[in-house]
Image 1 (tube, rainbow, N blue to C red):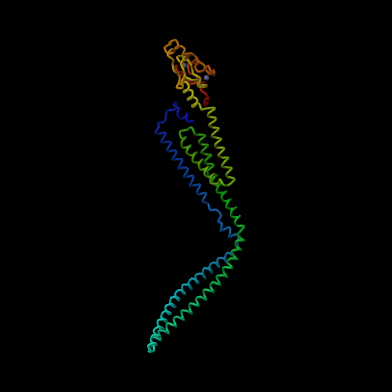
Image 2: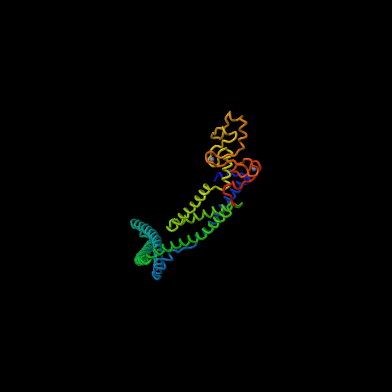
Length: 376
Ligand SMILES: [Zn+2]
Ligand SMILES: [Zn+2]
C-alpha cells in the first residue's frame, strides 16, 4: 500500500507542506474526537449504582438498627463522662498533694515548737486544721469520682455486651445482602456497558460506512479521523468491561472481525490491485525494460543483446552501434516468457505501442480496453 502512495503521479501531486499539515490536523482532530467521546462515555459511566448500605438496610430490622445507633450514642456519652471524671481526679490529686505538703510543714513547725517548749500559735493550729480539712474533702471527692467511674464502666460494659449481641444479629440478617449487592452491582455494570456500547458502536459503524462510501473523496482524512477515534473508543469500552465474560467474547469477536476485514481488504488489493496501482506497476516495469507480468527482460530493439543487471539493462559494446537494430524497436513484441503482448499496433495510427499503458506514444490514443479492471 505504501507503493500506492509513493508512485501515483497521474494525480496532480499534493505539496508536501499541505500533506504534512493535513496529517497533523487530522491527528489533532482524532485526539479531539477521542476526548469528546471520552467525556460522554465517562458521564454515562458516572451514573450511580446501588450502594451497599442501602441494600443492607433493606435486610436488617429498622428497630435493630435504631437500637444499635442508640447504644453507640450512649456508650460515647459514658466514655465522655469517664474521661471528665478522670480529669477531675487529676485536679483533686494535685490539691491533695498540696494539702498534704502543707500539713507536713505545719506538723514539722508544731514539733519544733514543742521541742522548744513553746506551744504552737493559734494561727498555726488553724492552718493545720484547714489543711487537714482540705485534704479530707479532696480525698472524699476523689473517692466519689472513683465510684462514678466504676459504675460508668460497669454500665458501659453491659451496653457493650448488648451491642455485641445486636451486631451479631445484624450481621446474620445482613449476610444475604452481600450476594444481593454483588448481583445488583453486576447488573449495574452490565447496564452501563450496554449504554456505552449502544452509544459508541453506532457511531463507529456510521464512521465505517462513511469511510467506505466516501473514503476516496477529498474529506478522506476527516473520515479517517472519525473512524480511528470511534474505533479507539469502542476498544476502550470493551477493555473496561473485559473481565466480564460476556464482554470478553464480544471484544475478541469484534477484534477478529475487524482484523479479518482489513486482511481481506489487503489480500483483495494484492490479488486484484486497483487500476492506479496496476498502472504504476506497469509503468515501472516498462521503464525498467522488464515484462510487467512476469518480470522477464524485454529484449527488444537496441536492447536485444543487452545484459540485464540488478540495476537494469546494460548495453554491450557490440550491440550499441548496430543501426539495423533501430528498425526492430518498432515492431510488435510479446514476452517470450509468459506470452503477454507488450507492444502491438495502435488501432488509430498503426504504429507499435505499449499495450499495458493507457496512451499510444505516437498519436496519444487512449486505449481503455487495455487498462486492467476498468471502473465502468
Ligand atoms: Zn512476461
Ligand atoms: Zn497510435
